[in-house]
Every structure is written in C-alpha cells, then in structure tokens.
Image (cartoon, rainbow, N blue to C red; front, side):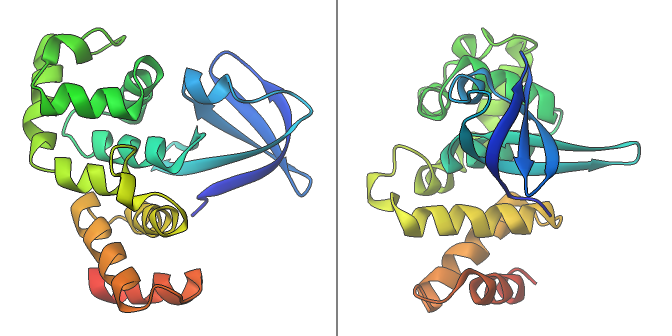
Length: 197
C-alpha cells in the first residue's frame, strides 16, 4: 500500500509526475489540478491511491486529501474506473463535484471528458446518499478540516486500498479516531482494521 509520495519532482508530463522517494522514482497519474502544483526539481507531497490489476500496478496522485477522498468515492460507483474519476477531478474541484451531486446536475458532470449523461446520472444516484460522508472528509466540511480530517482520510484510504468498501472504511476510520484521537497513525490503523472487520 502506497498512500503518499514525498520528495523532489523528477519530471512532469501532461498526465503524470515522477517523484524521487529516497532514490526510487515513482510515477503517478495525476489530475491536471495536481500537475499544475508540481514543478520539476522542486519538493512535492502527493497523496496517492494504488490501483492493482492483474496486468498492472498504477499509482494515482492528488495534491490534497479531499481530492483523493473524492476519487475513492467516484471509483466506488459501478462503471466508474480510475481514469474516468481522474477525468472528472481534472475538470472539476471536489467542491464542484459535490455541488453538482447535491443539486442533481448531471449536465454539469457530463461536461468532463468521457462522462456521458447516463453515467453522470448514475454517479448522482449512487453518491447522493453518501454526500454526508463525502462532506465529512471534503472541502465543504469546514469543521472537519485540519490534522484530524487528514488522518481520517488517510485511514479510510488505507482501508480502501486493502479492499474494504469506502463506506465501511470511512466509518471505521471515524470510529477509530473517536476512540483515541491522539494515538499514532499505526495504532489508529490497527484499531480501524478491527472496526472494519
């Protein structure tokens, strides 16, 4: 599981960035918003999701925890793969995606490359009930900002990378933080694993 890349940027292309982490160059496919924050030769911190398939291991990178959280929510929709989710988050900020979902605006989401009207409607139907969970980790949840929100999102992402459903992962992460908010990440992760199981 790789949830964060930190180090100097070796190269930035139109779709990805290569980051040097202790002498190993990791390539992550990124949203255009994230790529705009990266400069070759400069230090960077990118939150990641590792996508595992039979024929490939692919890292997807994000400038913020909120962007990564929305990516995980979008890929939980049946039919929405990582590249389609990346396209949506390249076209819209997490707050704009959330607003389109809450206001039932499929035409807005359909403006993203590769997202048709039917897929946009499906995303809204499947995520509208999860909006509270998205808000808890997302940019509109003002009370959830700061270190606690970042830890909750990192815990949830780690569980999702292990195969847990986003709803279960986020619930377990929230419960673990409520039980012991000052614990180190490793202890919180073990607690979240128990709660998810």
